Image (cartoon, rainbow over all chains, first blue to last red; front, side, top):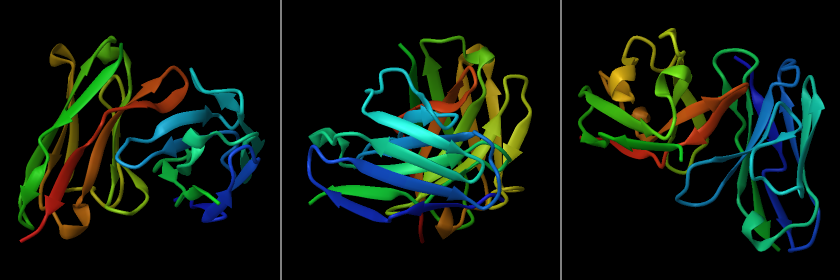
Length: 107
Length: 117
C-alpha cells in the first residue's frame, strides 16, 4: 500500500497570504495525485487531479505541482473560504489512499 | 446536475449488518466507475471499495470478506452490503463518482454508520 505523508499538519496563516502544502508518497505515483478540500460537515471537494489540473470551477489561486513522490498544493492568496483541511490522494495503485490531511487555519 | 444521495446508515451492534444505498441522478450511471469512501469521526479518509462500469470490484484489506459492493444500472443505484460490522467501521460513508480520467470527482453528502453495543 502506498502511504502518503502530508506536511505540515497545521498551517496558520492570514487571509491574503500564500499557502504551500506538501504531500510525499512512499513510492512513485507518477502524476496520479489529487488534492481535495474539506470543510466541517461537508464531503471532500476535488481541487486538483493528476498533480496539476484544476477541477471544474476551481479558482486559479489553487495550483498543484510535482511528480513521482513529491507534490505541492499552492494557494496563492488565501481567501476566507479557503480555511479548511486539505487531503492528497493517489490513484497509482489499488488501494487508492489518502494522506492524513493539512489543516489551514486562521492565524 | 449530478447528484448522489446516500442512505441506509444507522446504529448497529457489533457483528451486525447494514446495507447502504446511493441513488444517482443527472448522468448515465452505467457509464461510470463508482466508489464507497469512509471517514471515521475526527479521522482521515479511507477508500473502502471501488466498482467499474462493467462490475469489476476492488476492496480495502480492512473490509475484504465482510463488505460487498454492487450496482444496479437499471435503478441508477450503488450499494454496499456490510456484514460482521466492527466498532472500527464507525464512520461517515460517502458515495463518489469518477469523471473521465478523474477518480472520485463528485461526492454525495454521506451517511453515518455507528457500530456500538
